Length: 274
Image (cartoon, rainbow, N blue to C red; front, top):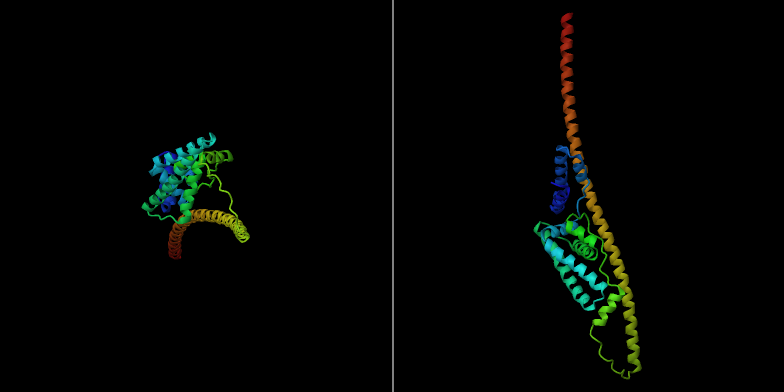
């Protein structure tokens, strides 16, 4: 098999089978004399749960992924040409398809015996959003060989695009003349506005804290995956060293036995000479 085919096969297999399968393919390549392929396979890292789920989605439902990524091109075109009506309609399609594909990836993972946690689902959605935003990220998703989730880059609309959407929205109704209000009512409104402003500030701070916490959580999950991979390799090396040590002990025991037998024969021969 070609390297890309092997990578795709490994990155869509069950996560627990990744390291043994990778090492098995690498050993087979080495036995065939293909040392370059063996070395490349050995360098492959185990995918995170979110990356694995997206790889499953890309390989088992490629049409849906392709349709989703095509929507990204339409969004970019509509934004570039400032087509407000199209932007609003496409943004609604984006939200719907993103939700559907995230659910589909979660379903596929469950069918393969792995229930995705909520943080992992969020990483799947983040990866799909990045793929929609960036054509290069989209190609990486379609390749089905992600090692870790893609960083969220969003699909932000520039100021001109936002203005285009607003221009195409329904015109606001004529404002009614302000009716006289009592001073107490005006003071209450001002107080409520101040409370709302303060709440908005707290919401922004909470959102920043959440973003930081989620980023640190993703980094910790990735590090755990790397440590598990390193542990699996170390355990494999330990098993091999134990096997070699056992073989060496057996050889030493046989050599000791042979020496003792020869020494006994020598003593018998020397006693006969006397």
